[in-house]
Length: 139
Image (tube, rainbow, N blue to C red; front, side, top):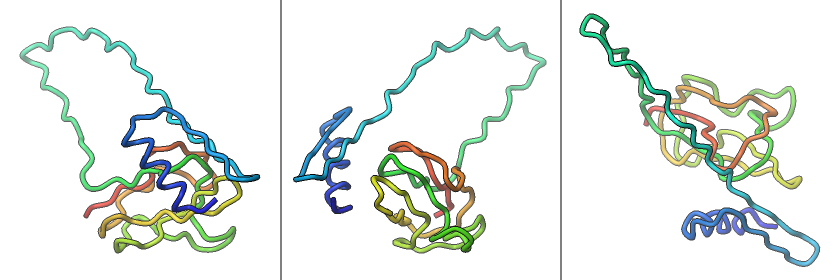
């Protein structure tokens, strides 16, 4: 199945707020499923005292590239080769950041914006989920 068709299916899922979709074309088939969010009750905290300063909350800056599909993430074109990107490297929009293998097809993950890679959030060979953050960079 063509990667463009898979991306269209993902867009359809997002637009229609579908949790799962399965398509069969001849002898090929694809099944996409969104992870179900898990909500936990927030623990009740004691009221802060005047003498205790509030902890600083660190919010991530910059853009985050997320996974468009479920699969196995690869940081390099093949084993033993240099990774596509490293922390601190400047990337341009459209540049390959990594590869996701899904259904024996290697799908390139491309930067949607230009910037500097600040953090690689997944490890080589890790199984990733749809929408999972992969890279964080400063645009």
